Length: 91
Image (tube, rainbow, N blue to C red; front, side, top):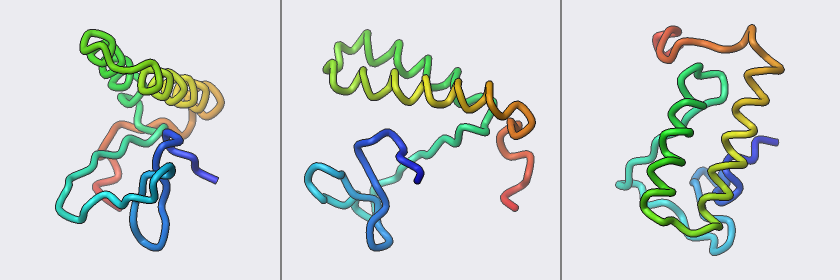
């Protein structure tokens, strides 16, 4: 099962916060990175740097680190699946 960052999950056609069950509102944009995106790990690394600079909580930083580890591990295990973002033109 795809665990994402561990804080959110798909439930009944919505993305919800696991701890509270609170759905992300329909009008709130979200941005999803896939592990096969060859720019994703670098993007997460940059986000981690910004989160550290912003003094985010250890809880949040830990989630970022775990996501980064998972993305890097995926790339190492699946080099043939790594893609330039957008190369499939949405197909």
